[in-house]
Image (cartoon, rainbow, N blue to C red):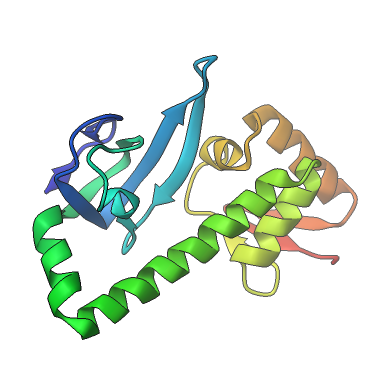
Length: 179
């Protein structure tokens, strides 16, 4: 199915009827705090599944919003459950995919538990990068939301780290110079 930026794929509380895989673009799974602040639970990018946590639920636990236009594959929930029950090879591949996603989510939770934004940035670069180098695939404003801070605070922290010689920025590439 084609997705347009800003399109809601499903809303919190909708009846679960499918699991999705991003073929192109990006989808954010979000909820809102009691104060109304948006909380990004997950960013699904090319190759990622989303709504898999709701496969055995009656209703979606969050909203899915397209943040970068593209396409996604819609997998009927009943069909997916049948494949998992009847095809051990498929089931093992599914478990491997869920395990990879779980590791990424745990790392994101660990990062958010760090008190200093500087440590969150370092954690991200070490965890998601190769030899401390990351090519950002999103604008700073979205990365800031993922780190749980304002984009202004992130810009200030990155500038300070650059000035101290801890970080190098070249366009969308960030490199950790000191560990």
